[in-house]
Length: 269
Image (cartoon, rainbow, N blue to C red; front, top):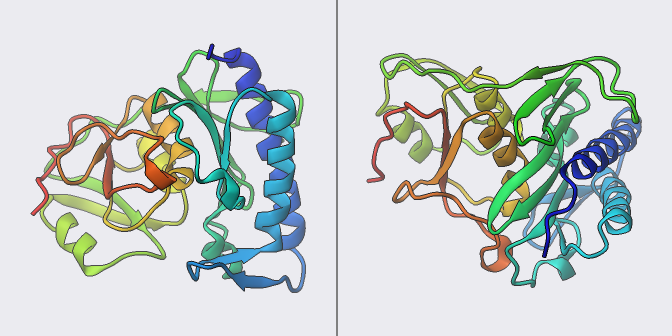
């Protein structure tokens, strides 16, 4: 399967993420919205479903030959593929429900198990990150016009000081094991963030290290991982620090570490 035109991929991803963000913010601004529990007890809202319908339709129309995996459509989770589109229409649903703003729209293109292009849009935060057509990551500023990208700033990971690292961790999924692992590093400061924004904070140099010792799925990480890689960062398995890959059975992730190169990674214990 030949790679789609990168400029078209980026343009379509960006436009669909912004349109989905508009839908999400309409519902976010309402006085009340429905929240249900899925089979795994995780929450889902009408915003998840509206954004998923919009993005899925747009991707299938633009790239009909590419397999699509999306969180909200369980019939897409049984595929055995290494090159595909993958979507989390609203990552950070708990943050959305609590009206904390740390939620994102995520769309990525995975090629031979590697997330090559991705967009992460945080509509409540007014932050838009994506990989450009050349594979380098940028953050866009401006009014986010659908068909006219604004000014962009190239993203580059930090040059870390291993005696004084900036660490980012999950806002909703912190646990003792994560805190114990972080405690093995020399940490200058630590921040919490929801959703795939954590990857973007490493990509911008606002953080050096993001360990995740908890269950995630590929749609949770692919777009943020693409942005991180395009900024010179790395994503590895927690257990053996080998490269992180996509297209795994059931699209389920092992524990992982996202980091700026130069961080002296501690082994798993």
